[in-house]
Amino acid sequence: MRTRSAQLSVATVAFVLGLLVVAQLRAQAGAAGLQARSAQELTVLVANLTTRNEQLRREVASLEREVADLTAAAARGESSVDRLRTDLARIRTWAGLDPVVGPGVRVTVGGPLPGVAVEDLLNELRNAGAEALAVGGVRIVPGVVVAGPPGALSVLDTRLPDPFEIEAIGSPETLTGSLTRMGGIVAQLSARFPEATVTVTPVERLRLPATDRDLRPSHGTPTL
Amino acid sequence: MSGLVARLRRTPSWQITLGAALLALGFLVAAQLRSEGPRVRYTSQERAPLIETVLSLQRDQDALKARILELNEQIRALQRRGEGSAALVAELNRQIEAARIAAGLVAIEGPGLVLQLTDAAGPLPPGANPADALVHSDDIRTLVEELWLAGAEAIAVNGERVTVSTAILDIGGSVLVNSAYLTPPYQIAAIGPPGLYDRLSASAGFVDFVVNRADAFGLGLSFAEPERVVVPAYAGTVTLRYARPEPSPSPGGP
Picture (cartoon, each protein chain N blue to C red):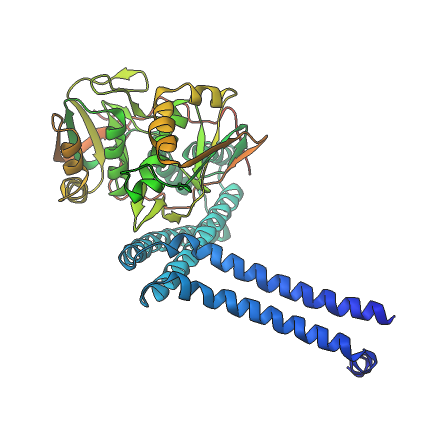
C-alpha cells in the first residue's frame, strides 16, 4: 500500500512535469520561425496579418449574414431558390467555371521571358486582388500553368504568341499600381530580362472565358 | 478532505520531499525554458512584443478560418433544408456542391505525393548569399507549378489549399500562402494520378530546381508517398467585388 501511494505521487509529479515541458516546447515551436526575423520583418508581418485577418473578418460577417437570412427564410417557409442561384453563380464565377466580366488591366508581354516569370506576374496579380485571370485567352484556374523556355511559352496546349496578353479583373488602379510600383514585379522582370517588355493598361471592361478544364477530382475523394 | 489529510499523514516524509522536489524541478525547468528564449535569441528589446503580436494575430486568424469553415457547413446544411420546388432545390444544391468541390472549398483525400522542403542546414557554398540558404516563396511556387504540370489535381502547402486566388509570397522573411504565414518545414501535399512522382522527377523544370537550387545550396528536399494524402478545404474569402457573372442573354432579348 505504501509503495503504491509513493508510485502514485511520483507518477503524478512526472505527469505534471511532462505536461509543463510539452506545453513549453509547443510554445517555442510556434515562435521558432519568428526568432530569426528582424524587427523590420516582424513589423511587415504584423501589418500583413492585420490586413488579411480584416479580410477574413469581413468574410465571416458576410457568411453570418447569409446564415441569418437563410434561417429567417426557412422560418417564414420562403423559397431559397434565388439565394441558391446567387450562391451558385458566385462560387462558379470565383472558381473559373463561368465566364466573367468586369474592369481590370491588360498586361502585354513581349520578348524572351521564361514561363516562371509569367507565373511570377500572375502571382503578383493574385496578391493585388485580381479576381479572375486569363493568359492568351485561356482562363487561369488551379492546375493551369504558363510554362516553357523563353520564346516557346504555352498554357495548357495553347502556344502563346509573342507578344501575348494577360487579362486580370479587379481594381484597375490597385492592379496597375501594384505591378508598376518602384521595385515591383515589372521593374524586377525588366532588370532580369532586359529584352522583354511588359506594359500594363487599365481597362474599363474585360470579358474572360470560363475554363474548359474539368475541375472535378478524378483521383481524390471529397470528404464531406 | 479528511481522507486526503489522513493519507498525507500516513505518507512517509521522503515521498513528500521527493514529490515537492520534483514539482519544484518542473517549475524550474519551465521557467528556465521560458526565460531562455528571450535572453538567447532576441537581440533587441522591441522584438519580443512584436513576436507576441504575430503569434496572437496568427491565433486570431486560426479562429477566423475555423469560423469560416463552420459557417460554410451551416450554410450547406440550411440550403439542403431549403423549401421550394423540391426537385429544383435538390438540383441547385447538387450544382453548388459540385462547384464547391471544383473551387477547393471542400477537403479532398486520395493517392498522391508529399514533398518536404527545408532551409539549408549545412555550410553554404563559397560566395553564396546567406539568404540562399532559406526556402523562399519562389521555391515553393516552382514546386507547386511542377506538381500541377505533372498532373496533380489538388495541392496544399502546410495545409493551405492552393486555389484560383492563392498567392505565394515572401512577407517579412516568412512565406505567406493565402492569408497564413508558414514556418519550415514546408510540406506540399498533392493528390494526383498514379505515376505523379515519376512524371515530376522526369520534368526538366523539376530537375533544374533539384540541381541548381536544392542541391546547389543544400536545401533539404524529401518525398513521401503515403497511402492517403489529405488536402484541406480553402478557408478564406470567396467574395467578388469587381468580377460579375456574364449576363446571360435574356430570352426574347436582342
